[in-house]
Length: 332
Image (cartoon, rainbow, N blue to C red; front, side):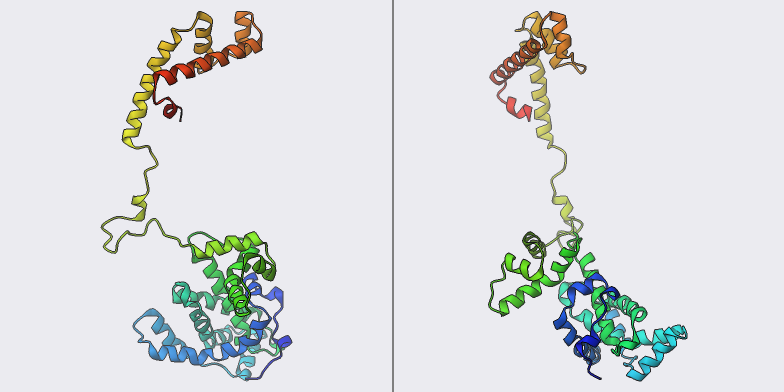
């Protein structure tokens, strides 16, 4: 495999999705070709060890049928595809590079995502790379395609590995991809990876670092998940309290309301005719009189009507506190 300089391997930013831009840095560029070049042997060793009794095992055996192409074969196929429009040539290019997706997907097995799902997402990136590849750059296709494969796998993980989306902005996606890696890098250099230092190194806000660190460290649980393996105890949703009040609380509150109405009738009998009228037609009515209407009715000012209303409310509160021990609970 011919070695290429860093400038020759660098991809244009417009060619890549934002996930790849955030993930891959200059250090990764130098290692990319070497890592992917070894993917053929990795995939071969893996498929040899696996018994093809699972979908993944059968897929890996199938992938081994398509060896890597030489540089000359690769250039010839791209000429047929890009110049002559031969779709069969594109198919051959994809099939011969399927193990690139296998190799990169294996790096994210620790995420808990289904390996076949990761491989298929990587294959989507592989097909995108076919459309974007420029043979004039003198870069082997698998080195270029690895960027797209990794970008699509990471985007899939970002969108689906949690029930709650955590990468909705570019800054969050940057932290999602690089926070743990930058922490480990700082620790190797002898630094304490606090939020301020991480924010400076990743060029994001400190509060974004704290928020993403908390999200990545938390865990999620589906409410539809069974409580036990035998599925006889129901789901975790059954453990949540009902959104309606408890029956005994509802009955107690209803009885308290009946008692309140009774005491309200007793309180109204302690008022004179004017105050009782204000209580009934201003404080308890569904269509209450305005303070101005009360003022006209009793030939008093609007301010005086407000004062009378405030006095009645104060007396009512004191009366109910004295008569009902649970008056505060009734107010809530």
